[in-house]
Image (cartoon, rainbow, N blue to C red; front, side, top):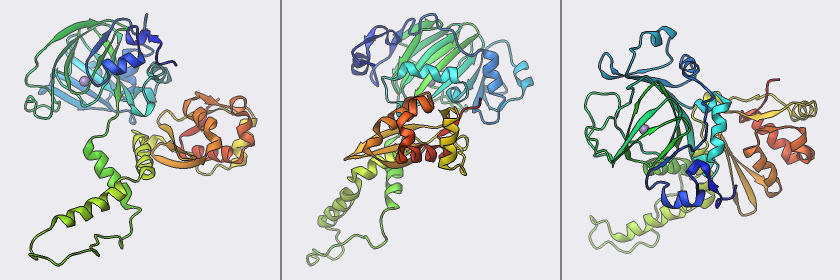
Length: 389
Ligand SMILES: [Mn+2]
């Protein structure tokens, strides 16, 4: 995709313009981002997902047993039949992992790195339904799937923004509305992180939220240093072989800080390890228990199955990304990493991007020892699996 092609999804501006003017900066309303959009799943199917053990879901009932009552799924079927006519919302996380047609929607967002995308959450709201005015720490695209939703946007917030007391939700105590729109199916609203927003269902409505991953500075530092520490020996310590006689033995001199700073810089500045950690971290699956592989499978079996017409597909719960360091390639697959020779670049790109892998598109790679080994590893690890016939 050319980043200078005007995109319908972005209301006729290019990806480059969107990233320059809106991304992480300001909201954008796009009428008919997906023209004549028909939601691939309906409210009943969404409720059906919320019955499943492995699916993460919540119900928000504005006038429940408490104001803004929140219940966590999985739910029993009769819980839905006991809900009031109005003012409740069902939220289902990571629907893209369970419904391939919902995962396909992400194809529209290929102008952003896939490792930044977290999941597609879906919400169904009865008329008047809302989760209250709030802010999120992540960018979001809100695509209207069915029915109408009124969206208000407000002020920029932060951790000091006052919240309503005594609710399980992070509802803002003050909402200073600046704009308001009614979204119809196919309309989309982009919101940058920390912008207050408040969506209220006009009628029975379904909304898709494409959410993003952005680790906090605290997460980056704690997780990266944790990762680094595996590679450091106990013998490597604070050293001061260059020490001068102490003027006052109780004083910490600034030369001690300089030694510490250089110790930190030496390790924190290791680009290979930083990249390895970051790729692993950003590809960690949301539900690791859904990324289970065929641990026993042999390379010969993989080859034979493919030659027999079997098709490999990416596990919808797996996350893949790649990068390069010097002449090597690095593949990140669901929280793990693997160095690969540079010649595998095209195979790597295909594994990350293709919907399906089979004899026809794998072609010559099946004759390559490293290529076959890689496919087999990914099947063992669970990021790739054979499609059911
Ligand atoms: Mn939100």
